[in-house]
Image (cartoon, rainbow, N blue to C red; front, side, top):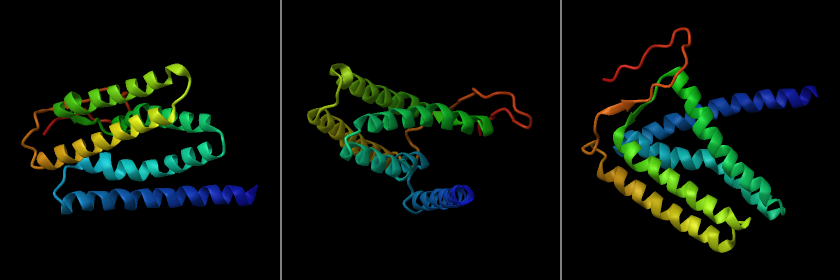
Length: 177
């Protein structure tokens, strides 16, 4: 029991240290290639943080427990949207540019609707998987193209503040620059 506890504490410390290096490295890549931070976050950080989930889901499918893969996919998305954005906005409200609201949120909704529609028969078939992968490849290509096209911020409009935060001691209201 003591060894397991030490392993968990060591693993968490290593995770925090690694996450910090990963964020610093991603920011350096963004600066080096003069790419928008949102693009780096969606592509590099998104892939990096999803890699463990992809491994878990692939192993679950290989072991004949695809329900774990499905639960992992939906659970991680719920966690990413509700918990991670919620905690982040509690610490510091998130400024969201209107082009994000106009482009990325509808894409998220459409992909979610496609996946939900594919589940109407109770399974995601191999054909359904190919459709999802084709949508993913298309969206990644479009996202990278848009990010590189607009890397100088020519397309941006005034930021819209996400102002849903609880009153926390020491929290300051968001003030746009």
